[in-house]
Image 1 (cartoon, rainbow, N blue to C red):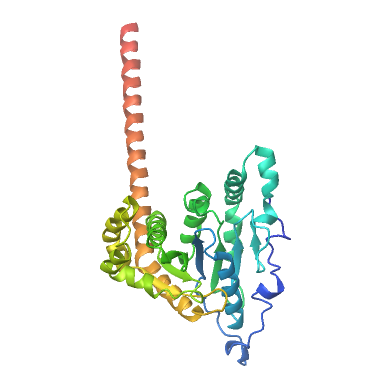
Image 2 (cartoon, rainbow, N blue to C red; image 1 turned 180 degrees about the vertical axis):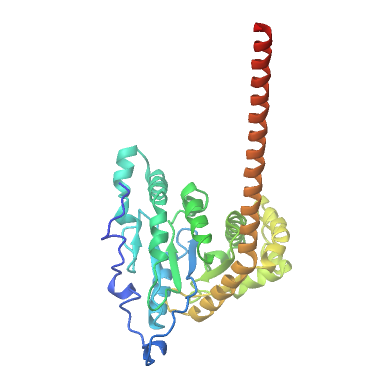
Length: 340
């Protein structure tokens, strides 16, 4: 079921998504009279596009794809939704080419969600091949990798496959989470709080820099949401007429999340009209800087801690072996003395 082939994961990018085939002015280095030394390019920034069902993730990726092509910076796109019937962009790597969702459901006797989860797990077992493709040198250098996640948010964020993919990418490339929010639906204060709780859980699960992307600002501006994040009194006023337990819980949570909001970047975009694309990529660059300043040191600290644990375990095991050898030698000596 899960086997990568040259045709479906190849370097043969779709014509409109191939960095090698995209029109671009020759670089100044290539115009010189002689060969110039190769300058190591910066690794591409990986953008994990995550959001609630219906928030517009796939449409947003199509808009990001179009915007980057207009800038002569074609992205590398990975689709990880095995159940989607159509995507409005040309994916460089598509899980549907390597894992057949309906076959997985039939073979393992699974329902729709179980089929999606198992398909992602199968795909994750070969994700090292994806990393190999992303690490290949290109001219012009690859600058952005967009990863489209399944519509069911928990399948990626709380599954083994999602954790494997996220950690593999984050250990190799600057990686950020773009959490897409359906702005019109968030006009309801409790729906807004539900989205914020999802965002904070993903932030603390992945420990990666996060960008809150308020989508569909062509339908409703996101200013009210930013105001709710900056001033919890305003959010409390929006809940004033609601005396339910859920509203009371939302009021309490708004106080708890106040610190979370302070360090969170937000941007308003429209996947339909293309509004906010420049601000989006400016925020992505800021998140990439945060990745180098916070995530990398934390990753190194975790590696050192793991190595120290393994070293202690080895020393403990060696001490046990030495004691066993000493006990065996003592037993042999005692047996020899008795026999003499």
